[in-house]
Image (cartoon, rainbow, N blue to C red; front, side):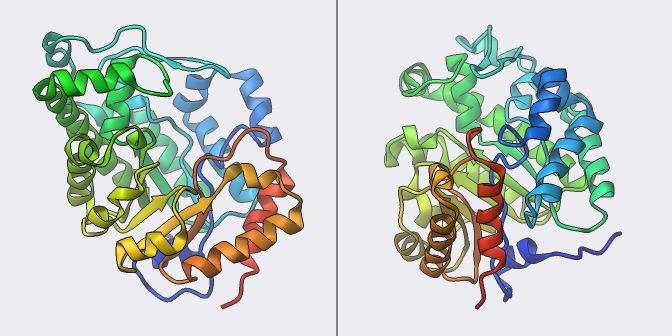
Length: 343
């Protein structure tokens, strides 16, 4: 077992005292890095995801080039619908498409929840290889999409601004919706447990579309499954829940088994601390678009952000994934500003 040379992230998640907050960025392995773009020109998306050596190379790029305090495995949340037996196509710059969606109970019954470790063995191989290549430099983050977000794609068949079909399904056929959400949850728990076994030090669950739900509907269709995942994994690895747009759920989720909560830029650090009673580690919430500001502005805003959250029980991050148009030196300035922060 290689000892971690930089365990800031794990210490922050354990509510231990840190010299400065740890920093990483959602989607840090990807589209804004010139070396990633070179690989994208040679290999299609799922080839990059399903080839452990490529996934490892991509995962390591931001650690080597931007200096983040954690690596997050290069993969995709839609490997879960694939493992359940659905086809997922990805068109560059257009997003995912699922040609066959879930419409009936028979479609749900046909989904296969067993054997996730074998079906997604390429993710486990990429984790093991990355872990070995990192050699203890920084922790390795594994991840999955949250059940509600995966449900949205499986019903809608593609990205959406409103998720009307998914919501209609949930509201008109709630029993079937819960049956599907439970199937997704069961396979996701098995998948995340396998990721820890393969080398993930911590896990993040992305509920990218939970903000499409009202507070009452979030409590019905998103929250129980997020809590179920956090409970199931609490003895395996610290879990960070990121329900984007669902600031109203922070209080309830802060009472769960999760070790951290990710927040977007639509809630102030002060409000997030108040809602969570300062008893859970918070992660976020820099607007990725702000990384286009001049470097001195980025650095100033980062310091203001850390001061607002407080440097303890805090992980500096963006409020959503880094966008392709961000210059690498601006991403590095964000990371450097956190690293230069002194308590």
